[in-house]
Length: 557
Image: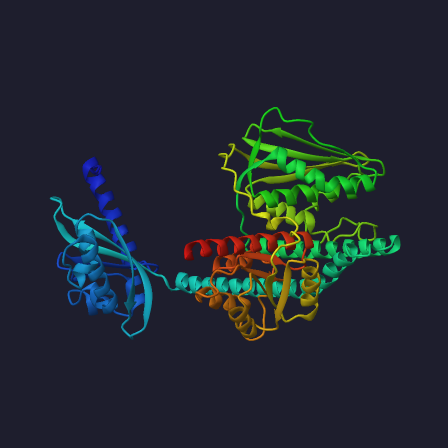
């Protein structure tokens, strides 16, 4: 029997290619995961695979050589696409298949998202990729449209959007609650701390026992205020609504200010403090000045609080290779176990010291860490049991700021009033009797001032227009109209527009303070009132009022 002649290599290769082509065609036609539609050059459907049949509900024989893919798209969306492309490309594109294929016909890759309409009238969003089909001479002989059902992604996006809105709503509710609670807690604290400050500085001077009692009231009150501020800071940071003002901050200056604040407490506990003796050259970090002080003071107070008797706190700094400055606070306390170090920055975790003598909530370090991170820095700690701990903060180095021109000093109103100083009127719009009485007693110490009071915003407007006071103190949360609304009405009235209006409020949320200043308040003082700060702000406002009055007189003359 003669042997069978082998197939020539070329023929074998062609057969393999044919088999592969047939396998590819079969895969395309039977794919259930994608709708695959091929058209001729006019856009009439020539191929409609199994996936398209499943997705759209048509049998292939119902659409092949009968309709265009644009006929199974939402017509309003096809029209909108035609109009959008016409504007984008500067040519008139007709609605219909031209709107779907125009970019592809010009060699521009195109993936669009439009709604498919099924045979039964149901609809679903689809992502469609359209590609031109070309012959050997590169002439377009048709188009290939590959589509996927986008319903799941759309549904997920809708659910995600709903969840995000719910989270934002919850954050707003939490922020509003904390703002309200902060206000409600600060209002009675204003009376406690305000009257305690009055007692401590009144005439006749308090006895030694009375002075000690007043100091205890003030110490407890300011500590309670510090806790309120810490909780509010933490909530604002975690809600993403915390704002900073980063600038070049002098390390020498900020350490000197921190030292002045913490050394009295260190002396009371017999803790020695060691700060860098001098700076070879000026050194600046990029930070929010107030917040970096808050960070360092918290670390310093902790180093003093948790130190051993007659211990030491050492502050040092070093520049790193990554253009940051590391500021370290070392103490000689009991030190921490490795598992305690791992839990340091967890909120409300005092590392087993709940029964100890030191007060606290365990959120100070959490706030400190968040503040450092918001400023773009990092924080860490190292500790050895029996040998103390080192807490460090790294912040980005900054160039020295440009020197600003010195500002002109305010007039003599910043100093104590002269004996022959003219009597000026203050108007205080406040509905809380304790707050009103506190300010009445503060103003009574000034021979150059007299105080009028109004219990609501509408009455305050009447008094302001009738008496034209030099300065107005305005609570924000008033019955009737708010303090902000009253301020805007006075600002819009030419007769009262010149009067400096100081907001005096228990609302201490930073964004609300800035919002009030942006709205037109001359200054914003948070309750509880610090007497010195209040008097300074009042003097600045009085000086501005006097300067405005002098300017108006000069213009009239």
